[in-house]
Image (cartoon, rainbow, N blue to C red; front, side, top):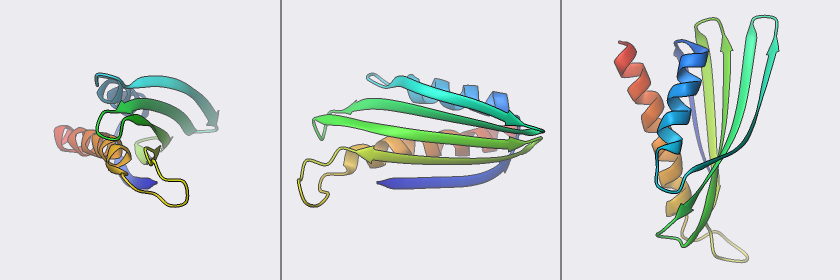
Length: 114
């Protein structure tokens, strides 16, 4: 399991759409399910994505949570799966690369908003 977290400023809906587009534009990535919740001025979106890892020959998942209070945003992404071992994790390249895709997307969003 790998994790990425980032605080940033931006537009909640814009970033959520941005991430969704980047994550699902891959060859085998799919949107599995999600949930949205608003309480007062705070918005929360949870998304689950899955893709096939060619290198690991298995499926990996990415759980994305975005929290926003006005322009203040917090994103956390956790990838899992991809290991082929029974008692310990080996070959976690697939989950790391799925997480890297999300992290790079967030960083690109930040740099393009200047």
